[in-house]
Image (cartoon, rainbow, N blue to C red; front, side):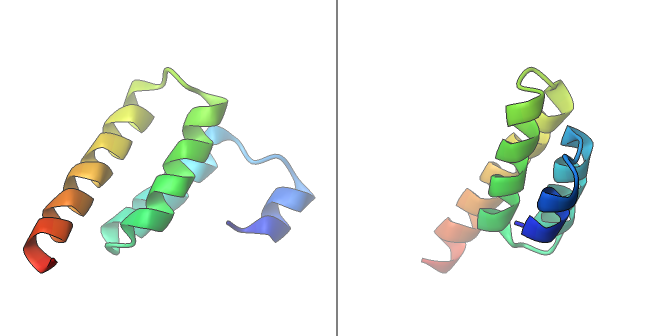
Length: 68
């Protein structure tokens, strides 16, 4: 994760979600899931974050099936 940013201030959950979306859109699913988890650790019942993470897992599984 962006440790320099995290050391400087305590980013809101939305920061982690946006970072995860960018990674997700670039097919960097493993790293995206780390950021989705960070967002959810701050707002565990946020439906948008949960749906985004679920979509990422689905895309990752699809890629795993196609390429393994």
